[in-house]
Length: 329
Length: 145
Image 1 (spheres, each protein chain N blue to C red):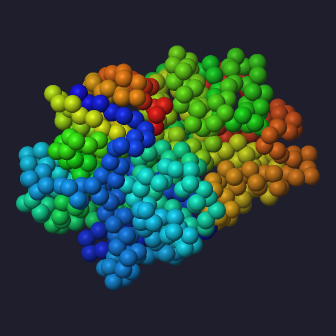
Image 2 (tube, each protein chain N blue to C red; image 1 turned 180 degrees about the vertical axis):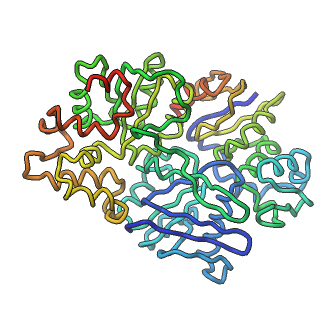
Image 3 (cartoon, rainbow over the protein chains, first blue to last red; image 1 turned 60 degrees about the vertical axis):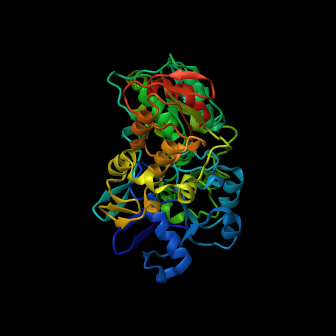
């Protein structure tokens, strides 16, 4: 499935209106806001269709995934929007991630757990906002300037001793080179899920975390709560991905990249790309193949380390950098 | 005191709504605790054991209460089981703390519930340590969720 999906679900008493932008959408938030009501309405419609009394406006079929039968049910679903209730513990398992990886459905999951097997975006985590009988989705985490996400703003001027990335390949090499000689240590946690432990083990240190927002959703709750407990020490910067920064920088012909970035919603096929970071990586590898900018994930091409190019790559998140690191520019 | 096990806990009741549907007693709904949590969390008024007036849905049955309220009622009235309290939103946290005053309450959390900015006492069962505020809770339990 591709594109933004607009959905309206209503009965005589309530109306839900929302848009889905990517293959995985997570809905959490307070109790009593309507998550169960929405799921039950979709479940009623799944069983009885229009005879349920539920009205659904959607370009694609909306289906509730029912508990124990989920694997069998999934096998028969295609090009659909699949809703999953919070009591479904199979969604925490690797088998579930593998089962939905190459499907062409979109998934709306009601759950407060991290769901570490699923590569969902920090931008696609919502709560339900209610106004009388009308309900809509509201983003739980919003990016500030320089792709900074904060649960609590620091009252002091931010400075850092460490740059921490989850990337251990090209991105890590790039940041190490970029920050070389700037009185800051560059470290890698080697995975998204290890960032929390790294930060917890470096309680006294001031750290700028740079990670791929396109697949960082599962970490967001605990990292934001950690950030809230130490706002002067932790800053979290989450651009879509390292490859997205390169595509956005304009180093590679803007004619080729502009539409690929602007129309990502329309172009990205959920059956091919489990996460948008996979798409940006694939696009970058494809359009730089056979050129001096040829990109590979494992090792950074030295052309990206040239000062003029690295500056352009960093520009998108320059406002996330402490002033002393910007001043060196 | 509140004791919480963070992360996967096979012996805990995960799907609390289904369990509630099959075991709840009518007096849970009309008890002072039931009336209060239903009013606070779901903004609804208990009319009788089988009828609750929701400002959005009209008159509903107890089975249509939010997942959070159902889990709170289970924690309060069924001490023989441990329940997945990650079916509760942060607006249920104060009720969990209140229930744990002067009584041992054990819950399973699969996320870091926000217990607010005040002081509290929660035993993190995974490490047997007691934490007294959110900053300590996040540091102690974050690794397990």
